[in-house]
Length: 172
Image (cartoon, rainbow, N blue to C red):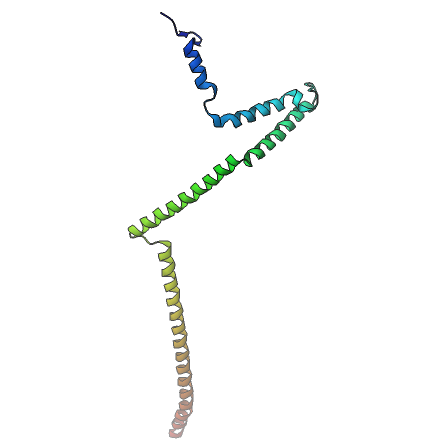
């Protein structure tokens, strides 16, 4: 009986089939793997342009500068790539569609339930403001009429008062 497993993994044809399944499981990951391979190549001391001096104080600054420069260029290239722009476009379209669906759903729920909506309260506020303006206009008109009547009454009473005094003075 042939053994197909060892303590260290598969052997024979099963191992070959296993390796083939994991050689390139996702072809869309190739750019990602390429990014890290490029970064590691540039982080290599020979890729820094200057000889690597482990005892130098500038070595860490140099490595940091190379890393951030590389990272910045890679991020910029990725963000300008067609794949990233398509993904962002799709994401924005999905977000806008979700917002529209949410608004439609909420407006349907508010219409189906006896709850007022924003448009209901806005129209009610317009009616109340119009009513308030009419009431204030009418009150001002009434106030003017009352003032006019009071002025007429004061004028008549001031004319009538001297006549009363005369009559009282004449009888005494």
